[in-house]
Image 1 (cartoon, rainbow, N blue to C red):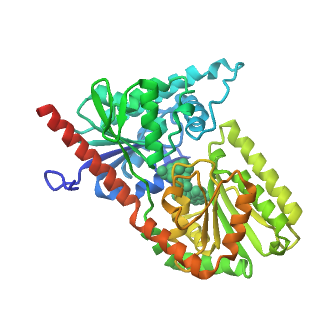
Image 2: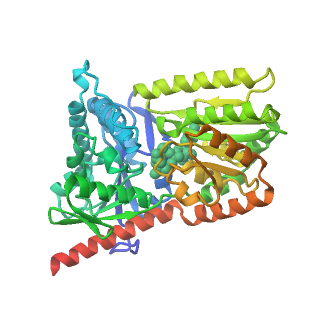
Image 3: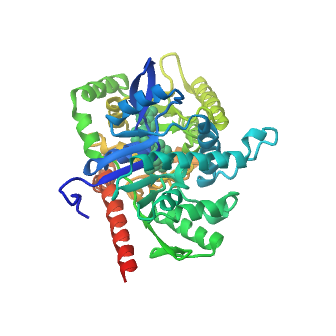
Length: 489
Ligand code: ADQ
């Protein structure tokens, strides 16, 4: 595909995701401050959007009911090419309820949660209705801004109804849909009450993308088992329509990380961190505080490592940045308490007045400091129980030019299929295995670290976010061109 439109203009792309890349916060009457939202989806897409005249469509991070305020906020967001979807009263049941309470655990193999029999306001059915309503609100925002020829790229499990709604509105709209999470085996997916309707809705897209071959294969066998349709990489054939399915492993913008590590601010932060941890090895974890990220498992493995290797006590720290997310979902609040309990126990058992083995921070860090942490770490510890890709592991590799540290990576992260050759792969639920991998990483000879780093760096550099976006757009364009040719025949 060329990125030039007919009159030399860049083609228009509407990127639709649950959340806009910026979150708004009210600072006064009709005035708002904006902050970048952390998260893998935003990080991945930032590398892509420069080739297109891109508009983002998504929730702005706040409820706004007053029409004057809505207009004021929409105007500020428009300057950043963002179109808000005010989900307001629908948000709780759609986002906390159906998306994160039901779909997220199913997609990550955690099973269907039990319905609360006492809360008749929050049944699966009411949450599902809110989900559909929210998807319609996204449609309305798109329709208001749609121009003939626009490409609409829908992201993630929040928007499984959108392809169907878009095609019902205008069958000629070019629609792509990408899943950032895993797609599970059909045995897990089929427990979902609305399983067929959701599959049929996403099958209205022209192209469906997944991070790994396994996820795409699970999706296709699920279509066959649940809908009884023919599904191969040539396409899924449902009700006379063919939907293309393909694999697009996401990446990062590696140059942004490499550049930032060399800037004066990060250089100073790197020096301060080196001084702070002089003579001590640093193991790093950077995760959203999410049930899928395996943070308790990480702490249990580190505890075992300290238990079994007394000579390493006071010579190694685990710095864990765990930005809280989804605070309104009860499981996430429980997780925070559980993790804090473990940190207290391990620091109590193995710490001293002058040294604590775990530095756990409930916060988001700014980009320069994040790069500095990646750059000084000796070991990166990723223990996701399931993860679509895990961009943190890519970011670590991009920042390790000087140190050439070791990546210990869960085999259940999509990244294990791309960085597996250079990383130490582990089963995060096996504390003994993770504890041994920590030790292996800490004592690995420089020559082997260098070799592993080179393999991973090359992969991260080539498979960038830009490549991911270019590949998706190129296949989407080919798919649409092919189906237009079929129609003309
Ligand atoms: P996430 O689950 O958010 O993404 P991940 O891919 O690791 O997971 O991306 C996290 C992003 O947030 C990274 O860019 C990281 O730098 C940033 N981040 C995390 N904690 C932070 C903190 N404390 N401070 C600042 N920044 C922080 C989802 C899926 C993943 C998939 C991505 C992209 O769950 O599996 O890889 O989308 O598709």
